[in-house]
View 1 (cartoon, rainbow, N blue to C red):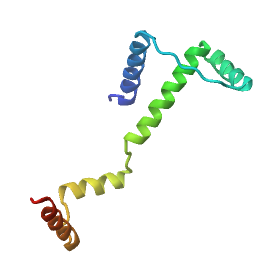
View 2 (view 1 turned 60 degrees about the horizontal axis):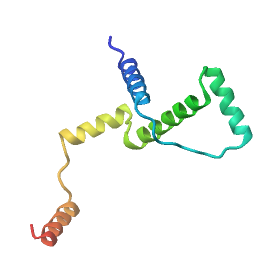
View 3 (view 1 turned 60 degrees about the vertical axis):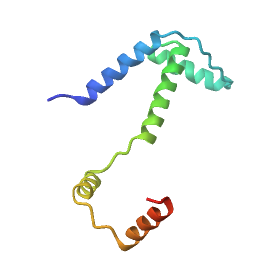
View 4 (view 1 turned 45 degrees about the vertical axis):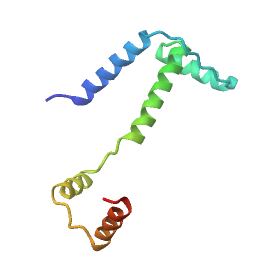
Length: 110
């Protein structure tokens, strides 16, 4: 059996490594409290990374997660079945929908 998640994780890791080799001309600065910096340094040390590497990696992961959550819709099995059924066997348009389509055609000169 092919483990798609493992393949995707490997692809993302390779892509991230390739991007990290690219020229790093941009700079990001942030003011943080002493406690926050100590926390970040502790976490970086646990992972055996530099603080910079830890922060960049964490930001990349957080940004990718936010984008994925907002660009991807995950449906339950039941929702998938309802969606596919609606695509394969769409219901007849209601009277309201037909009237709206007619108004649109009149307004747009179609």
